[in-house]
Image (cartoon, rainbow, N blue to C red; front, side, top):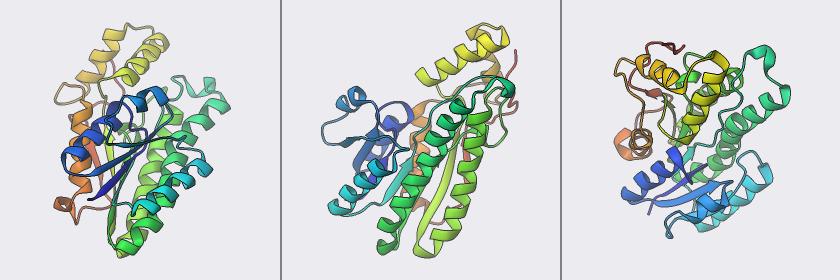
Amino acid sequence: MSRVLITAGASGIGRAMGEGFAAAGFEVWVTDINAEALAALPGEWRCHQVDASDEAAVAALFAKIKAAGGLDVLCANAGIAGPTALVENVQLADWRTCVSVNLEGAFLAAKYAAPLMKPAGKGAMIFTSSTAGIYGYPNRAPYSAAKWAIIGLMKTLAMELGPFGIRANAICPGAVEGPRMEGVLAREAATKGMTRDQVYDGYASGTSMRSFVEAEDIANMAVFLGTDVSRLVSGQVIAVDGHTENPDPKV
């Protein structure tokens, strides 16, 4: 049975990915920092409380994966929204925390996944970036910078690991329905002096399909990228966002 590891897999996009890979016949391993959310996952999933930016904890997890037989697919999905503020109001500590979780978490997952995949001569690494990593977003400098960097990391790994049969791709979600986006909407509304609904409508109207994205839409793309139907798809940045037309949402 093929094995997938999903970081930050206990809720939202990560949990949807787990459900998608489970339906495709994968053995699902999940990490998250939220013990309560992990406890609510299906009993057959292998669940571990791990901080994605803690190298010692990540190394210990991958030692367990190696002992279990290796890894076929990595979904480096861990991330946080970071502060919503003009750049001059962003605190360095908040910048570092955002970049650490989003970028260093992806780096550490890839660092320890690569040696497990190379002997098998195949594998897939899927990185959760963002449309903020394609266009940038005002008031989200740390998050946008980290998500741009994830794309650079992914493209480099696609070149480094391709000769070993390992593919690397990045998914760029747009605005995804759920608690994290609700937090972004609330903070952005406060920053811009708007209501939550005005900000929501601004994001939706900034896409050609006039719609937010569901977590399952991201999961479906991840399963596609993690299976042999995409065996020659590598080094790609794939937006699942309803086609963003306006990266600076306004009413």
